[in-house]
Length: 354
Image (cartoon, rainbow, N blue to C red; front, side):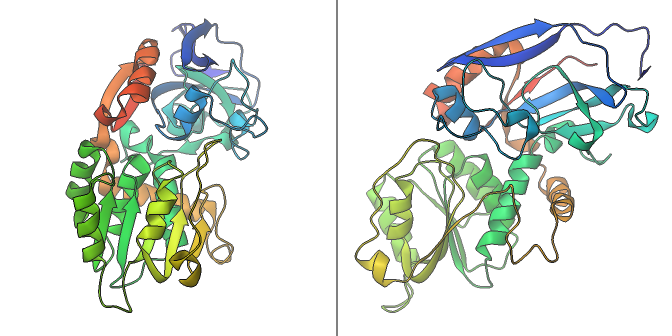
């Protein structure tokens, strides 16, 4: 086994465990010996998902569904106690005897639960380009989701686009859409901090979905003529099932709705009668684990990751981090996300240097 610092003893690994609904704790255990094909990564930071991860915290994942069917570390069903998290960035500090020593000292990304260290194999690691910081790299999953949403929605020149939900995915999506020559880009969210940031990132207007005045103004902006009204393209990324009704309200004839939210076991009655039926709406679900079939001939996950790295360089989403905390503060951070989400854009756990 090869290490960066052979004489330095690794302290006990700290791991975050979800032990019950709205309960988390940090557990420690000693680092085991590496197998020949394994690497040890000392984590620099890991990002909390205020969407999917809070479903786990609240116990809102369907019991018969894997946490994530495409991430090897998350293929178990929701059953406490469990580990979760899927955005970790760290430094390779030890490698097994059959692992190329060039991995040592490399900054890497991994779809891993929150922990100070983890052991894995090379195929589960994504090298981080040298010119991208750890705090920008930790946004890779959310950026890939936003890129996938753009590709699934196919925004066109001069279109009027609405993004419902300005959490991190919604903000990154708005940032990407702002690169397009759209006629209008509108962001909708109930939280003032998110609306303010959406304007900074390039949205033409922002609206509070619970403000009748705001929604009346938004509908007026989307009105072109009696025959052409509503948004051309609407993204639903709020995580609130009832937001689909708002999406339908903002449509016109042949409008497109792309659903990027995962609602877990939450549901709502959706009004698909009346104009929604007559308008020949195109409703698409978008999920980042796969490529759209029409893109798969020319796109691969590797190509999409290359695009994501480029957009991370350009947009530097680390500016969206509002809270940094050590793993020991996890109970307080999750409670704050649960009770007062309006105060947090993005929270990350930070770890002591390797």
